[in-house]
Image 1: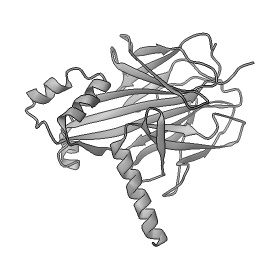
Image 2: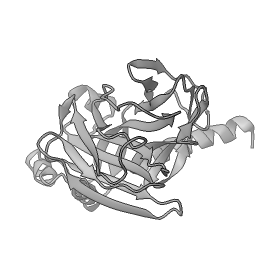
Image 3: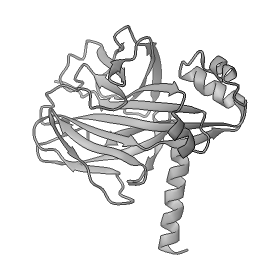
Image 4: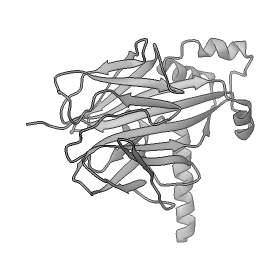
Length: 273
């Protein structure tokens, strides 16, 4: 088999897995780096905080950026880069990497699979709305996009996470690299820059041994959710919005009847002296 054909198959497999699995998140090769270090982050797609790597693919990338405070810059890449994101850490402080994908689609071949998805993500009225809209029970085409952030510490890691303009976004109100580990961390879920009140927010916790624990809470009236974290563990915070797609997206996707927007935020809580 030719190299070109092998690469084409790899790209197709990447896109197919991107459309069929659940969360997408960024995972740096190192969560804490010195000043001026090269920063690399894997783009992962999977379930239960376990997944396969996605390659840099400009066809599906809307945004790829690095931020430190108010200083932001685009991240460039070449088709097939793995790890997908690479950039320089300019100075000491909290570093945020941002990734946003273009819409893609998934087709639920059975109504039960769609019902399982909406129940898992806390969309209690979705099935009733599906019936009111007189949509077919199957197949069901859904458009989806990913709105991804990861937090890293450069040097002392000081600084604050702030909204970066994603349509759906998780903001860490607590800096995991400098906060008191005895206190719960707080996160705010935002949708179109407004708080996602009374909305399901899920925390995936992975230990150094690879054990994954999951807990979910509903955000308060200001979109804030709190979780207890533990030093040495890696975390993924997740929230999803399900909505009726705009007409142009329906046309673009050739018939999507639902649209989901997925937000993820990853970080690692360091050991402290």
